[in-house]
Length: 341
Image (cartoon, rainbow, N blue to C red; front, side, top):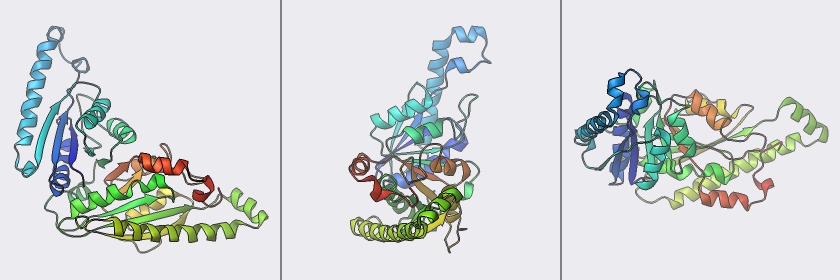
């Protein structure tokens, strides 16, 4: 379970919406929440007069005092009862500072909104939130702009259990997202049982690739073999995870395999309950920032980034663990190749 949850704030009400979610997660583990504010640089405040800029040190001290009062007010609010609270005011570049504080505080989860403001700049996906998600060594839960229903479904005192879609591609890289998703769903669903849905979207070949393999007489065989392997793999994963889960992780596991020429689009449809099969809509999507899947690489600028930029659902972003990376590097490439690789 997540013991220390970091919440970066920028003074906006939007950013503060991450706090109840973080509290819910930390409370389930009897953990703590770290509230972080990175002060706006005075040089960014171009509307200040020349005289005011000459008193930069005084202005910054006053700003820090204001931020400390702001964080103290949040820390004393009813929403933070029953969890330990740490407040931090740290100067620096926002994304880099968030990551540095997360490491220093030994946080095991970062929860942040993708849209807020800091001075005259926004914390938008593609900027601070995205940088943190791409470079964090611990999981990052991003709550998206314009999705109050889904965001509220992760907040405390919500009646229904949480369901997460975990995107896999058959490699240890993407499997790194499974247990963090299990822990998050269990924390946000308690005392009810949550659910994670493991899905592998098998990438269909392009027309040119289809023609090439049909000429070789192997296209159908490779496709059937890939689907068979994916189904067996997910079934085995479900059984293994079920045996590894402790009593506190009250989560049910389902799984499915889909075929598609567009992996990201299929993942989004499955998460929304709109896939070709009969799917229940999910409350969040969990995926890794990179991995390998034959013709398609789940890397920055590919499947993961398309999902990031296309959905309003909360996203749990996980970097592959060193164990998964080590396992993948020592495994023969052909064992994890997608069809038509």
